Image (cartoon, rainbow, N blue to C red; front, side):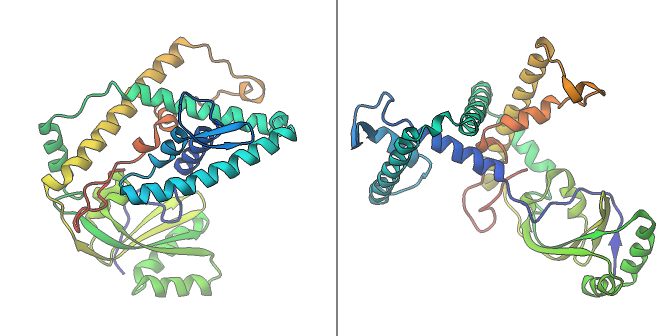
Length: 325
């Protein structure tokens, strides 16, 4: 079985971006809990003494782009019923003084902080300029694995629990196996714990920093890397060429470069804030040198959900999900 021993960061095929969904849910909750106290003038319903406005419904509808007028009308009625149920729940919670519960207060404050941080990121990002056509062309030409030579991969990822003294023996056994199934049978027989995940991933759904390495792998190749718990294998079962031309890719490339500039702008601003602010580590965090979060990681935590990963290109067989990570 052919293996390549490069050190490469593999895509985690089992995780989902829960933070993005959580932020969206928090934003929807806070927007919807206004109880008609905003600046909207149209009332959709009254729930006891509180109003639910058309403005609140429209805010939620904006999260469902591309709806026809008929679909929007039907959904608006469903959203209104949900807002009524929500308002009734809020009123009952207030009657029970749950809004004074310390746990609820903490959650409200945490939601407020996340929304404010997101608003800050969006404000910083508003000043970012669009990339010039030559910048888009340059990016396209520099990433053949993502566009001109784009492939859709059928991947198998195996995580093995092993100690360092087992690594060499496992590598040799992998080299001598005809396929990953035979290697897995050996692991079972040896009582070595492992987990296998399979997925079909286009190039844009792989980590950008390891895409070139994976693109050099041929069908049947397996790459190995050491992890804190043992070894991780990435096996390219099959792949097929599915290129994207520059015209089709242009919107996605432009969006990626804009998002990249936003992240850099936020990073720069946060770096300045850290330098000008007074940050003092206390308690157990002051007992040893603290590893300060970099401005880059801090920026990633507050980048708007739309900027967290590259946006999608126009739908087509070749590039219906072209996004850059």
